[in-house]
Length: 182
Image (cartoon, rainbow, N blue to C red; front, side, top):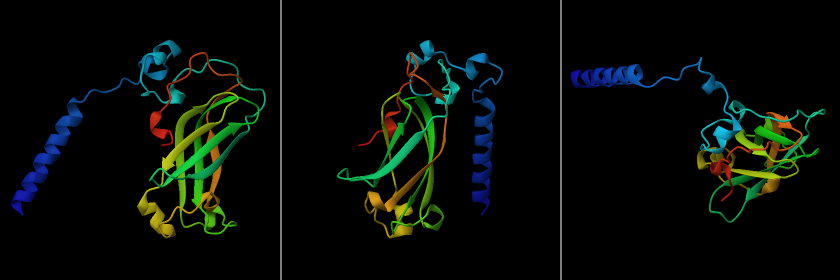
């Protein structure tokens, strides 16, 4: 018992030293607040979209973003594809979606045994469709019998989107390859 306590004290001390000496971001540094398109063009995807400057004009009307969900077949994974479009042809970024498993076609979100919420830190180019994918893991699928079913077994609702512009920015952000379908 004494060896366990000693080991716990040593681990806590090591953690305290790490926290004390690690580099800290300066919240008052203007470079931490916004990233110019020129700098962003030379960086990797380590900047969240909402943290970068977004030049261009705000749309005069509210964007009309639509999303559909489908099961991706033949990839050896339990993967769902989300297709985003915008009716007016605007550039739109960051999407939050709720999706749920529907054992019957009329199953509502609140009645489903598997309801998930996901944030996509990605963007939709003006006048295009953006496909983003994610994997549903087996422990999640156990709630509904372990099977993905078909596209008809999934419902989706866009709960929020981020900023929008009437046209694409001159310099587009880098695309997050982790969200691409495989």
